[in-house]
Length: 334
Image (cartoon, rainbow, N blue to C red; front, top):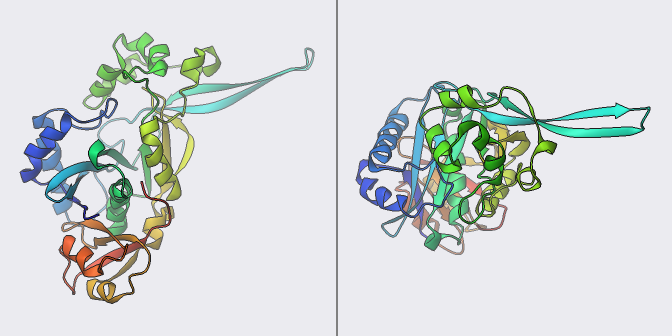
């Protein structure tokens, strides 16, 4: 597998525009027009070019390329809450007891919160269906973490990801129909797409008081913290890196949010910095990932399976004197 992950460039715009048509229903953090895609590329170019410093409000936009074809994208959004609120539902448990009736009831409540401040969000993870498998999902997901490991100062103390929640085959969200649709009077996809541009309407229209989950229809309640089947591999990979579910779900489809302190992420803790020459001279050993150790020139690829290490270095354009980050993977391919 000769895929690499690198920053998106202006020359990618035509191919990224063509990719929009292949994006799965529910992948609404993906820019939906050529103009929006061009804007994300420009913002990302500024992010990769800025000197090392604490996060402000950057977007790092990565593409996966193999044999000249763009086959996937991934993003990192820094300093959540800086430009606009980042709303979620936090789940709490309310316990009630009646000694006279010998009845104890435990109920889950959904609280609208704006708890993510200064975190980095991992988002927009997408691979063309024709290219899935062979370790590409792992490479694309973990490349974002290798970028964090390259310069943790840029990404703040904590990272999080909203995992796509369960929707039916035609894109219907039972949770949205039972909750959000009652307040917004619009369908799920329209509301979620609007949230990418404007969060004010959420504060204006969402319920201000906790919602008892037990009052929701069974099919809606079953969606709470349930990932979409297509998102289960991504969730498993993040959990393998130390991310955990902390009773927070998306306000639209109730998909789980996972989070981790940056210095607790396995790649950030375990990736080894060395010269490309040292890496190239090493024993082939087990599979792993290697990236350049420079944010402006970032590129990542997979190595192993008997392939000469020099081939991996060539893919990421690393010369012998360059520094690289090396991470030996532990989990199954995805």
